Length: 166
Length: 255
Image 1 (cartoon, chains in turn orange, cyan):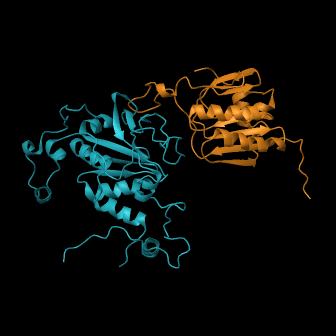
Image 2 (cartoon, one colour):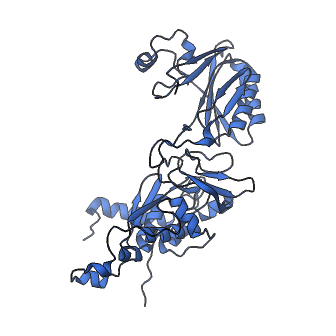
Image 3 (spheres, rainbow over the protein chains, first blue to last red):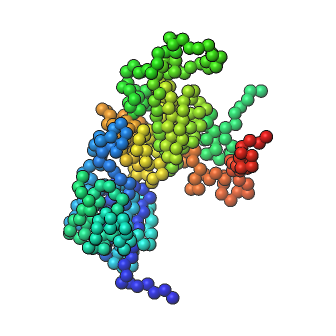
């Protein structure tokens, strides 16, 4: 018999069937935030460069990708990716139903919610090479060690930037 | 009796569409002005003379060669134009074309061109005035949909990604945009350099229309085997197996 603990954290992944516009992403993230029980959240998707990365137009600014500010609770940050999936760590199972309802409210199309393990909890060699010793383990799995540019992570009200600013 | 080429087997809608693409017998869905195509390609300005890499062939005094006498040069080659390209990315969400079928279309129907097939994009190179006319044929015909296909010279990422909320294929450089009037507008050329004005490409196909015109076999659309659960596979699978067998056993040389 399997006993499901109501105290251990659960990790879930939300995969909408379409890429989200910044407004929809903000609506969804706010609904998730209001649902409560959040330990960690990561927004994932293809990069939106600020300038043409290569080719004859290299360096030309892409105005469409600038100033996409997303406000969640009392935090605001600039969206750098097209939101394709959201990974969450919740306090316990009881928040999952509310999460499904939040997605139903915010997304005008279908979506999947997967249970699994999406964040690593031990430091890898790449993590150590890139960030050194990390004080708060919640940061692990939230930041991309392969990213060349700055990767932003927010720990409650404290803002942590893990590389030099652009 | 005149020979009729048999381009592709099968009786599924995808098989029929593939035959249409290869034969070049395509429906014209829109008429994008030539100047807009030239602007989107970005190799020269509309109305500008074609730069050349060599003098016109008539002035060059070609050697006495039977092949040159038999093969008539294309207009671009005869004028000595530069070789230029146009490259397309097609979404795998029921885009009308796929890279291989753009290449088949080019190889069969376009003289003096060099198609290149990659997993998510397809490039055709030819003399400048030739490639402009080939590109116009592609853009105007049912080979193209303005939301699910786009001309992308670089940063082509998008063909294997989910669509955006408004049904457009993801584009990292935001070369096209969906207008409030439901039309798709080209705002940058194929390499991401902003255009002076927005070019109206027209309305995108509906999902049902795209599924009707697609050349992509998909399990959630039309599978390559034909109707799921049918007693017999579609001829496309039989032909594929036949080709696989010949290729595996005799290196494609059934002597």
